[in-house]
Amino acid sequence: MTKVIGVRFRTAGKIYYFGPKDIEFKRSDHVIVETARGVEYGTVVLPNMEVEDGKVTQPLKNVIRKATPDDDEREKRNREKEKDAYKVCQEKILKHGLEMKLINAEYTFDNNKVLFYFTADGRVDFRELVKDLAGVFRTRIELRQVGVRDETKILGGMGICGRPLCCHTYLSDFAPVSIKMAKEQSLSLNPTKISGICGRLMCCLQNEAQVYEELNRKLPRVGDGVTTPEGLKGEVRETNVLKQLVKVVVEVDDEKELREYHVDELKFKPRHKKENDQDKKNEKGSKKGKNKDRDKDKDNRNRKNREETEEEKELEELERLEQNDGKSKLDDD
Image (cartoon, rainbow, N blue to C red; front, side, top):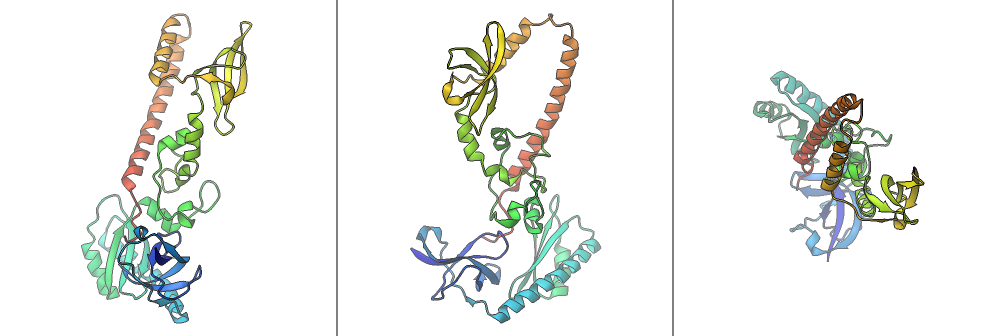
């Protein structure tokens, strides 16, 4: 076991382990540590504890010291300098006519480096910009291209739920999110309703995905045949995942009734999708020519299919962007 403390360098940022030496730290204490970027000012989020050796990246660096009032004042001055650095960089970007959006500027604690975070649609040749900025700040300059998720994580905002964004308040990394999660939770597949303000799938789809996946496994699909406790054969019309209730259409005395049962009361064997598709084709064939408004219905179906196809394309594009984004580029590993 190794004694460590957990340190963060930004709100909801990645947690890094450092050796505490012989100092006792409390949560929210500030510390000065050496990182890959140089000397940094961080906040203790995990006080002195022991973790398994395999969870610690070796060699483990020790903290330099607990932050003093002078360190706190220096950090405050750095935050003010970042505002000026942002304005200067923004002016230089306009001067060079670069197609990039500046997101944030960051000074390391020792002022050994200034980092500028930006987004862009493609690769940007910013070599002349770096030379220009180095001439102004007289220190090392790093421009780091990040994705739209990282941009939102830095800037923050309010989600459609009315609460501060998860990625800006507590998510230290982005968990993989997929369209399948939205389907499992019976959410609208309209891309605008399942996307966050970053334009990607909402991170909160991950929160209950495992629970819904487990509950859905116990339920029949809509359209599946089931047997009720009364011995009646019926077809599933609707399901309630959280309550595990199933609405079934049954035929009683030549009349159809909609009844609700708990899933444990029903007997069923889910059919394969291919079988469902074949049943629908057979049913369609048997009714062909009997409906006078068949042509009108066909037009309506075609229009609906076109709308669904466009929505599916949007969903596919959304999932492709999700896969391309990858992990956060804000933190140094």
